[in-house]
Image 1 (tube, rainbow, N blue to C red):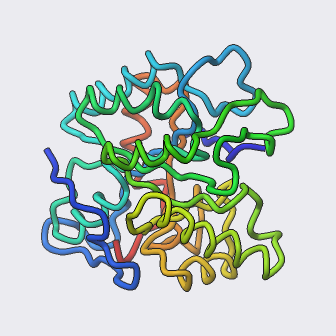
Image 2: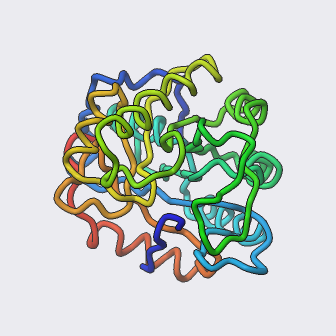
Length: 268
C-alpha cells in the first residue's frame, strides 16, 4: 500500500551543497531543535478512485501553493531547506516532497511549481522506472517516470532523491535486500542524473534503528520519514501529509500545530 496519510523569499543552492557526511547545525536566526516543515505529496491528477488518498488535483495543488506564497512561505527542495537552515536563513521555507516518482509529476506538478516559483524534492524508485505502482494492491495503477523524465526533472532544478529500488518496507527486509535498496538505488540515480543524491525517503514512512543506520552509512545527508518518534533527526525527518482536503483553513491549522505535534529536530 501507499505511504500512510496523516490527518492533522528564499535562496536555492546547487546540488551537493550539503555534504553527505556533514550534519548541518542551526545558526543564529534558527532556533536549535526547531521543527522544519516538510510537506509530503505523491500524485497530482485524477482522484476519481483514490483509496490511499495519495492524489491531489492540479487545482488543489495550485491553491495550496498560492496559500504558501500569500503567507510569505516558499516551497523548496529539502536539500535547500537544510542548507538554508544551516546558514540561519531558513525562515519562510517549506520543504516540498513528492514520493514514488509518478509520471504526473513532470506533466502536471512541475509546471505548477514553476508557476508559483517553488522547488521540490522528488523521491524516485530507480528499480521501477517506466513501470507502475503495483505495490498498491487496491490500485489504481499509475505510471511512473521514465529515466528520461527523471533526467528532465533534474535538469529543471528538481532535487532527485532515492525512495529505495522497488518500494519495499525496509524494516522487514533482510540485510542483503536492505543494502541493495539503500546503496544501489543511490548509485543508479547518481549515474542517471550525473548529480549527487543526498536525500532518502523510507518507503511507507517506516523506519527503525537498523534501517536508519544503513541509510546514514550509505552516505545520504538526510532522510525523510513520516512520524519517526524517538528516531527523529537528520536521517529521520518528520513530514506532514498534504492531501486533497487540505484547504486554506486546514493548512493554517497544520502550520500552527506542526511544532507542537513534533519532537524537536536536533542537528538541522
